[in-house]
Length: 178
Image (cartoon, rainbow, N blue to C red; front, side, top):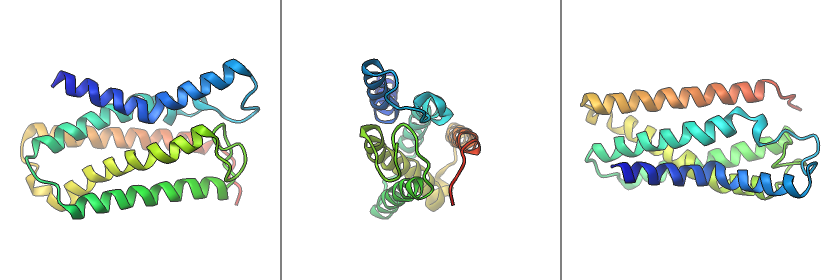
């Protein structure tokens, strides 16, 4: 169980944060003004707190909940989750460009650097995984019947809520072009 937890934490950190962190550090070390006046990795709470702490813990909770259910995931739940993750990815990145929410990973509308392109890979994976959790609950809520499972669900929802608060805080201080 400890090895599984560590493995999930490492994969989550790698996909959601470490790749972008290494890219950021590489660019800044070779040119301290690499990102100009754009907001960077450490200007977003959702980056260093959300991607670096909340999502890895959330992924562990989701894994242990899904594996405790002893419930086979059917193709509908998996397909729906992946579809929603892909649509969310399109929506987020399309509107980032449309609203000209430029930052260190998209310095010009619709022109993403490596960090932005990596986000287009990691985001739908993470979004699909969270949707897998939510869809499993939605379609099979009656299978959550043990105190441990209820605690995992409540913990997961608390982390999703906390991430959402960080997201709102990050973008409440951004000027959005209409």
